[in-house]
Amino acid sequence: METIKLSIDKALGCVTRDEVYAYAAKAEESAALLESGKGKGNDFLGWLHLPSSIDETHLSDIEATAESLRSQCEVVVVIGIGGSYLGAKAVIDALSNTFAWMSADKKNPIVLYAGQNIGEDYLYELQEILKNKSFGIINISKSGTTTEPAIAFRLLKKQLENQVGKEAAKKRIVAITDAAKGALRKLATMEGYKTFVIPDNVGGRFSVLTPVGLLPIAVAGFDIRKLVAGAVEMEKLCGDNVPFAQNPAAIYAATRNALYKAGKKTEILANFNPKLHFFAEWWKQLYGESEGKDHLGIFPAAVDFTTDLHSMGQWIQEGERTIFETVLSVMNMQHEVVIPSDEENLDGLNFLAGKRVDQVNKMAELGTQIAHVDGGVPNIKIEIPTITEYCLGQLIYFFEKACGISGYLLGVNPFDQPGVEAYKKNMFALLDKPGYEAESKAIKAKL
Ligand code: PA5
Image 1 (cartoon, rainbow, N blue to C red):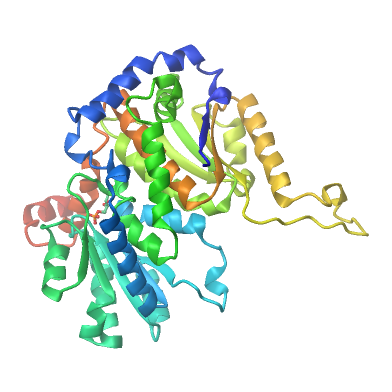
Image 2 (image 1 turned 90 degrees about the horizontal axis):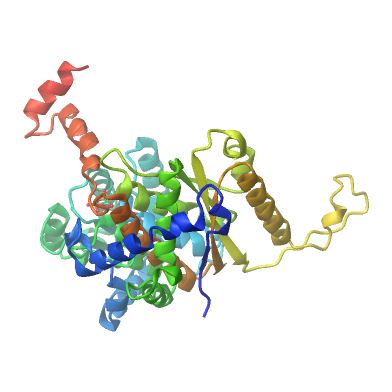
């Protein structure tokens, strides 16, 4: 079976291998602390052995629900924000044919997203496009009270009920939320929606292998069993019994902490495959929300290459030397495209005739790595054999485990996100939400 591979060779220079390996004992302690459940945020460790604990009944239930939505709907709208949508979108975008939405031969429903912003035009245009379409909704909110998805659901629920009637609408709505608490659980019980539970001990950004990610991914037509199998494999390869030198999650966590200590404050996740754009968005949330606290933490940024070499390339090559790169390198493409020869050769490209497009991309990748390393940007590389469910499952668990270890190495609680509340409090105060009278008065005095 194919396995993703981590290489830190090109990150060494700014820090030495010894400086990275100096973290070995601490990284092993951090992994043991995760395992013992005695560290910070220990009430949110449900992700740690989630892959290996997913059972057949659970998977069959998700697959059957996906099939029911697939058979009824040409479009399924996934409503959610942050950890309640990024994992699903990351995997679906990585695996999908980029232009499938334009194809007349629709094997799978189109998956659209809502509740991840408060864009009035976005919601207007979504409602317009859904008119006269047979659509369904997967409404995802762990707390069940998040404003963005709640607004989107209120709008789309009404629209669906108007289009197909209240009873038929109920069969096309699935709610994924807390087992007992929150407005969404209450509503789902009242309306009799099919529901799935987000376990109490799994935070949003670690929830892609719960129904939060698995149901939309199955609806989009992908094999969630292979995704889970990949994650199970990585759970073994990054297990706390695996010594530091063989444990990719521990080495990645140690390397980024060593680089951070050496003044590299920003990590740029780079890909050379546009299908991974949203995988980087998922990663940004995972690391940003987990580590950015107590005035500490590497800033997680992302670029799509070669596209962004023509925009951010200058900064990366010659800007402030406070960055390092982690490159997602996909080894094998799914398809072949060969560059044709041209009699006129006006563009001077005949030296590439007969070569695959990916050969050019690989040389762009290698050339970029050499240029960036020469320019003082340490490079970590993660080789992904092919973009498949199995490899993505591995990658997800690899980054989750590394994130837990890395957060403990940094000394923060990687499993909370208290800072997210500040904007919500101000927004509610500005909108005169009942119960926020004192905050309203205080914030309006500042305007
Ligand atoms: O990682 C997190 O916990 C957050 O990003 C949440 O996923 C996000 O805020 C959405 O929350 P909820 O699922 O409760 O609506």
